[in-house]
Length: 313
Image 1 (cartoon, rainbow, N blue to C red):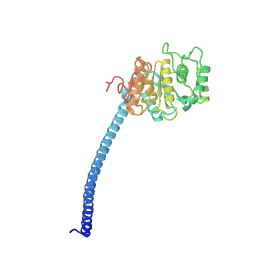
Image 2 (cartoon, one colour; image 1 turned 120 degrees about the vertical axis):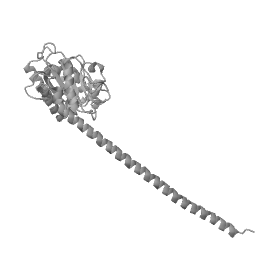
Image 3 (cartoon, rainbow, N blue to C red; image 1 turned 90 degrees about the vertical axis):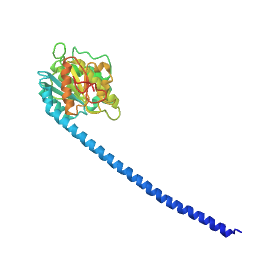
Image 4 (cartoon, rainbow, N blue to C red; image 1 turned 60 degrees about the vertical axis):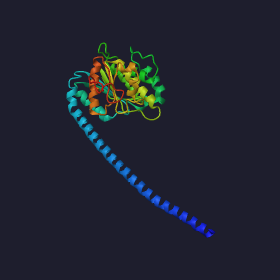
């Protein structure tokens, strides 16, 4: 007869066997798991190493390309703007190094920079829009008419364009020196621009901006700058809007222009002016403006080609 003691011993033996099995199984599983994790870690380390190698190689190629563009840039633009005049308009976020490099290339191209105007942060500030719209009509030179639209960028372009550019029709100033000086002084006192002294009207203009607009009202800021540049283009023989990386997306002035077919049909844009190649392209695009042509140049997805005359990618 099977006793209670036998049952207890049997149950205890089964439980002990299960415990031993669990310990042995978990030990084996842990070793397998650790082995798998080690292999995964080794693979990740190798992938990181490969990516770093690719990145370093890419950076080296970019450095070589920048060095090449810096060296051949002056030769590529030589004589392209011979005896032409250019006014340089920069935004608050434009890189001074880009400005200085462009001025050097313009000199290589044979052009003369007649002056510089910097648009302050308040110029595109949505909170200052009403003030800008209020002051512009009061500074209008005799014989100059503002556009019928009421946005601050277009209105400001309708004022500054004729002040800074000579007429395409007769190559004559569109405002007197006194009218220009008075208007620029008033805009400076209002905190909207910073203007150099002795600015002369030019044939062509470069509007140099930074990357994507940031912070509150970024879209409104980009739209103001885009519309301003477009209206300046209508005032003279040609304008190029040049921005750095990020300027061609939806939160950048270049991107806003490129989304407007009417604007892109007359004004050229460059989205990589932060590179030596982009600055060369900006000068070449300015030369193209003299021929009544326009294009979207650079490396962004909405560019039509890297440079004027280059095949589309």
